[in-house]
Image (cartoon, rainbow, N blue to C red):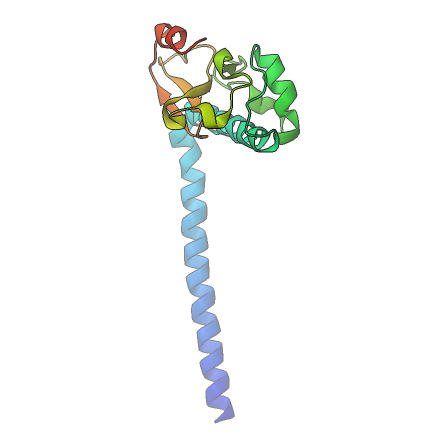
Length: 156
């Protein structure tokens, strides 16, 4: 009986190890393939998302109000405690800082009628492929081919 139980445990551990190895290998393989396919625009979105999350943490800590947002440097100074690396404030494609929407400065989150449609940060220059990334007041980051005229309508 003891040998049978030991054999059953050994078989279960072996099967679990084999399954874990297969799952881990497939996950690692997928992770290794992903960055090459996603490219520099993806890295830009990742960085802008980190800044957006830092902004959301700031807003949470400061009575649900956005920081002063007149310049990129002003936003960077306020968000630095919430962001791990200085490099995330800059687009890896254009090497320019992400720009704030000036009208959001000091605004209450409750005063934003539709955070999912309200931009707060954006690429200061379009990427060579015409794409520019925008972070919204709900923390999302989307890529698009927006126009400078759209920025003027939203107070930048």
